[in-house]
Length: 233
Ligand code: OAD
Image 1 (cartoon, rainbow, N blue to C red):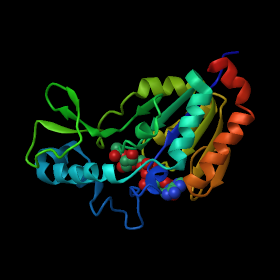
Image 2 (image 1 turned 30 degrees about the vertical axis):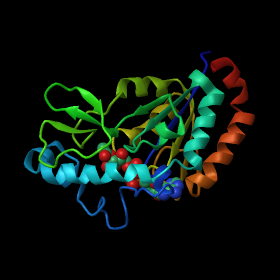
Image 3 (image 1 turned 180 degrees about the vertical axis):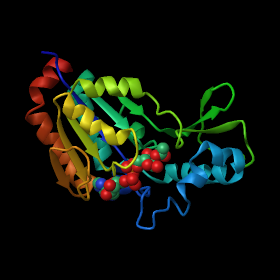
Image 4 (image 1 turned 180 degrees about the horizontal axis):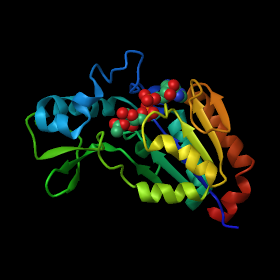
């Protein structure tokens, strides 16, 4: 029997307590915008100024926020699990990376990277892009675009013995399929959220990520994953 892995998927909810807004607020708007107006290739073609200004604002917020207890707990889990751990994030903030996560796939890209529309070159970028810039764009995945690292993610899910989703509404494809894929592969599936979602989870732990995740990680490290960490780490 092959050694299983622990796959963690995070969404905007894990960064909420660091002070970054989630996407689907009660008003259904994202920072006051309809998603179609700022997060599609068509929006960038038709109105680059609005799109660049939107991402400049999000990027400019990053220095003012810091990783929270849930981000840090996932670093402890990575250290305990070694190569048997993989983190997938839908978030485009850089809080996991700043906390110290390294075994991470940022499936929707990142605010601190930009990409050339013709060459595909990617650069690290921390300031504003000019609002009328049309050759360099945020290296983020917009609706209708291909998810980053999906083949690798699918492979990780097919080997998972535990799948943990934290702070994601499960409304966006393909991340909303991951729990079901992991479950079919034989994994136990757990979510941490303020409220249960419609995903294929065996267990839902309800509460803010900063309060639930650190304790959960400690229990996993001391308990069911201890043997696995020895073999997979
Ligand atoms: P959403 O805004 O859709 O969902 C955030 C989830 O986090 C909700 O289910 C909340 O209940 C939960 N939540 C909020 N605060 C929390 C807390 N303190 N602790 C635990 N859970 C909390 O965000 P995502 O699921 O990440 O895509 O959205 C997925 C994708 O939709 C994003 O990556 C983005 C967006 O459109 C792209 O930009 C391509």
